[in-house]
Image (cartoon, rainbow, N blue to C red; front, side, top):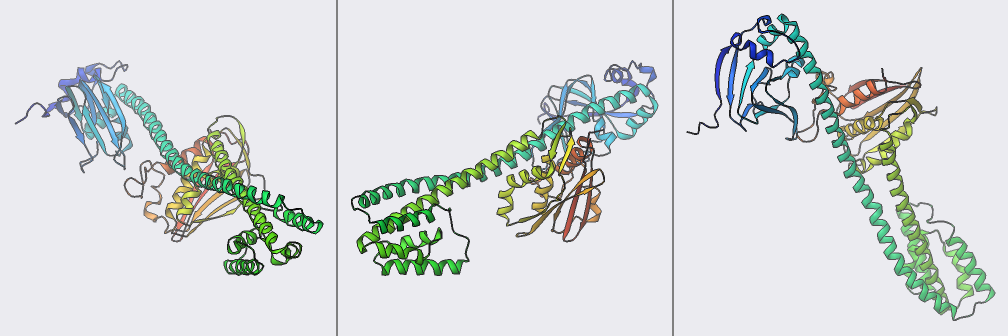
Length: 483
């Protein structure tokens, strides 16, 4: 039997460890004889690199005061996705576990000795007796708890920010890939078109043009350069127009009639406009002229496609820039509509994947608020991301804004199954989530509430019933400074 990695436990009286307990609470000035309310505790002798506490396997949560008498230990909080976040790291003499005792609950934890360690495990009742009886210890425990809670919250906020950024980065890469690929394909096809256009131009240049031919080609060119595409038609109407154009070209002896017909229709040409070409050009010349026109029309369409793709990339970059600017902590005007639109742009890929539409009902009044608050885009990201997850395939999300006395109100509404009443009060609690393991951290709504109330001095409300869940955020319109 391997005894080197075994933990030994014995029940001891805390009176016998009074002096060593005072060493674990430095700065209190408390003397051993001042300790009172002491009972019994478990004394653990833990070898190096051995886990002495594990609540991930269904054990009771770590609701105890742990006093590190000798050695060094760490404790990690286990996230829903199986990853771990460091909650404590310290060397003797020191205590830990106050945060979860005072909070009344604890997430799944793993605690391990880094070096051979001696640890006192003081149960909940003995802890509260000590807190009630000894004021210096009580003050020190509360100070420790406050400091460690801030660290935990900072780590949790940082982790949630990384999760949000990871989600946004994945979406951004997806969004950039589509217009990038479209622009690359269009540029490649444009190279082929320009080569063909050059060949046809040289062939046309060898034949003198009559005034009637020049006038006709001038009119056709003016139409071709007017716009990138014709007004949208139904699929049936477009198919009929393409077939009619191709048949007309074929009957006129035009080469590649069924190839160039759809391209001419796409930019808005009708048969009647091409009659001047049939009148002005002979059969052989007509084919070259209209093939040249189609090569030019196709090239214009490809340039428009490249322009549209680059504009899409520019819109995405601007949306991310606005998202990043949101973290600047200065007194400034924030355009809430613009902030929401930037977030919708970045999350657009996720909505398209699930065929979810967004209906925006923006108040016509000034959407600006003057504030030093930061991270408002993170509020919209979390609320909209949750709304997308809650919406059925092909569903709809409503985003509404309106003005109230001193406040700008923003509502984000999904039409999913709703939030059951029994868990509605818990949704803003840290680490509470209804999503499957690995899909949610349980921090999104807690961070939303903290940003809205603490950073902006605003309010957040939830109304939910089957078929509709509405989050309403109210932000002060002027001087919306955190308390």
